[in-house]
Image (cartoon, rainbow, N blue to C red; front, side, top):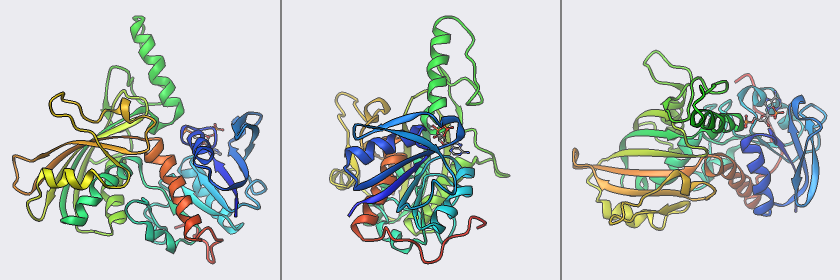
Length: 347
Ligand code: A2P
């Protein structure tokens, strides 16, 4: 069986990767529609040797679909996801619009594949930093429950979209030529610089990105008891995020045991050469499906603590690949079926 698929946000950083993954992973596509805003109408993108036109998302272009992979921002998803579901499609949404809705499964296939079975038309793809961290620490949580997570992120420009990636490159060449860098997409120049994630701050001083890591990880793990604190920083890297993670377990967990477990965990590649001081790097994680994990060591400040470091491609496993893996899971479990009751966009 093959399926009628649409990519909403096909011209974006994640959208173009979705297109590539549907082709390279040989997803059973009967027909593919590329949807975006009026700005992109007239463009075309290549899929399996054919140039497909980019069309404006509308009631009409969302007809007769089995699957919509949406990555066009929260407000676009809020406008169109419920309409696509009403018309019979299943939506895998990369935005934050539905992630914390109790009726919407939030899925990382390596962690909670079974959650997908309860979908009512929309399945949410988690935040990129949350996906990367979940893949790396879930196997450890299975052996000994994690009580507390302290995570610091080093997030690339790609998280803010294709325009932000281009902006960093322009800024870098401006600086190298002795000119002032111009920031239009991101709030400050990112080239040769870094700054805290610019999502809105709450009353406690945490930004939205940090609270996504807290709330989404708890939802994916099905564990509201884990204490999590995060500091999210944007760094001048193009497309892979890195994270320094401190874990506190209920009982002592040896670094060697963690290393052994992570050396054969799905979606994880262990990168550690202690003699060469060689560990995961965003430049090497770029284009790879696996989350690179390394520098696993005992926390010298706590008997039940472990430190680890990871880099993962934000656009791939952090977004497009996770969405396509969810789609593959739906196909495998025969769950790519129209919802009986659709989730209202009001929720
Ligand atoms: P467009 O290229 O037509 O603006 P990125 O995350 O790389 O910035 O990409 C965002 C994606 O979401 C692009 O494909 C963009 O299309 C699409 N998009 C943004 N706003 C809308 C909208 N209002 N309706 C449809 N697509 C949108």
